[in-house]
Length: 254
Image (cartoon, rainbow, N blue to C red; front, side):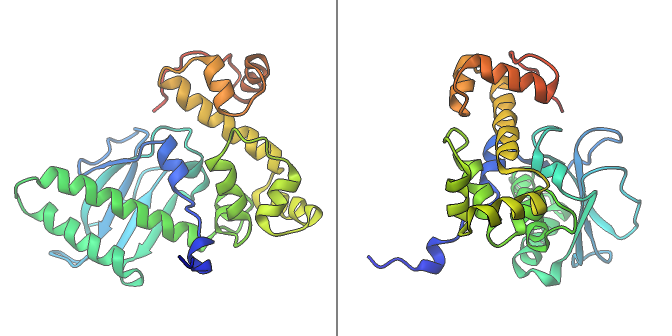
């Protein structure tokens, strides 16, 4: 079978975050002061929807043109993707045909009482959030950080490689090869775009994944091995430096 090189070079920049942090969305609006984000569908009374606004932090401004409001949970406060996004992400539905059509189905379900309405609304809302996140990554960011890295045409491949295989003993040469750059160029560009060194980013990602697994009941020794640390002691020292506490069975932070 002949492989299309344009297809084979594509990588998924979001799956690792969804695997580690379960995305959920519900038509029920988030309560004031809680940790959930809000999804606002905006348009004239009766539709059609004209704009989607994802409010990740702070109170959303009351707007009489809001057709539907939903709560979005990114799996807790420590999701690095959520923390990399701006306070609000806005997308015009006409700029993205798939988003426009999905939102139309979402609004139609919200306005009617049909069999399976709640399940349909939750699933459609999750798809809308995913499409908004894609738009945010495509736009990139002016400041250094994860979002800027995910939108970079070469560095996003390196980030995805680390996200997908955190236990691998990555070195600078390996990562530079993934990026298609020389080692010196890669190291300088990664720091410029992402705002830290590749090894520092990898360690942070490993510890983030470890914290999630501890929250789900995994043991420290097993988690240390799963995320690429040579020993539980080395893992514990890094964990304390990152989070200010020793690794143990964690209570998820919401």
